[in-house]
Amino acid sequence: MTWENQLKKNICGIEQLKKYIKLTPKEEKQLRKAAEIHPMSISRHYLSLINKKDKNDPIRRMAVPSEEELNLLGSYDTSGEAENTKMPGLQHKYKQTALILATNRCATYCRFCFRKRLVGLPNKEVLRRFDDAVRYIKKHKEINNVLISGGDPFMLPTRLIEKFLEKLSPISHLDFIRFGTRTLVTFPDRILKDKTLLNVLKKYSRKNKRIYVVTHFNHPNEIAEKSINAVAQLMKHNIIINNQTVLLRGVNDNPRTMAELQNKLVSIGVNPYYVFQCRPVKRVRHHFQVSLFRGYNIIEKAKKKLNGHSKRFKYIMSHKTGKIEIVGIKNNGIYFKYHQAKNSKNIGKFFKRKLNKTGGWLDDFQ
Ligand code: SF4
Image 1 (cartoon, rainbow, N blue to C red):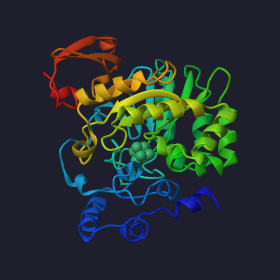
Image 2 (cartoon, protein in one colour):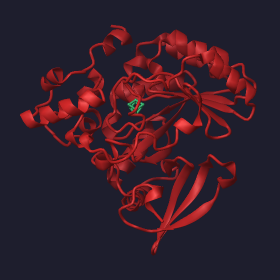
Image 3 (spheres, rainbow, N blue to C red):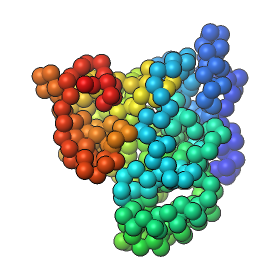
């Protein structure tokens, strides 16, 4: 079966879900309400990773809607994406990086997604005219890399992915091109079943202009045999793989799980890159975010279990002003550092806020 046909077998309705996961009538009602607002779609592979007997299974928590989504605390654009949008589907926040939102589709819709406002929903934010984006990138010589994201760009047909690479690769001021995809985790057959995709990626991953895949593993249970094979295939085709994890309550908010995840990733050839603080996104913040105080302690305890290679990641808050590293807590102070900043004058800026133990985002601190 092709990957396209396989995707058509995703679990998208509650009736279908009930065949696999037991729901009480109350749960069913609430779940229907949540899924009406943000669609549910779970690949067969991702479904197979859920321990159906465990209500608190971490994979279930990431994929199955819950009543907690009815809580409206937070906002839909926490990183200021609207103000960095130069044209539909193209953002330019950091001087060196252009971000393309290539599609609103994903192989599985993660309930914690920070682009919840657009995934699986009709919207005007995804790329419409690729040639205009290419023109913009060509004109802005300070851009040295492009991140193609979405949604999940590997949901696009391979010929379109090739078109992107065909047009972007010859731009001399680009040093590398990245794809942000979670298919390695939620739908590894996208990679395993499409030899053409692998060959296209290999063709454009040149000695002096590499293709990177930025993927997104959040829990050791996601590192399934198929995912390991997909990683191996990408590596065999000269692709470098980095991982971003989101710190999520009820999923990976303990040092043991976090350490096991980062260690396992390194063992299969995936480089730890960021651990992101969960953004204060509407229908997400309430049940997925942990406080920065708790988050910092989880990460520090996890680091004690890790070797230098496995703890190369930074614990980062992707704030509208920039990527802010949470570097320390001492006495009544919490210390931050701009790793990347919208205003380049702020890059490297080190600063302190008064500690409170409940704040989950910079704006919660004075
Ligand atoms: S795959 Fe990425 S973009 Fe898609 S729903 Fe999950 S987190 Fe969001």
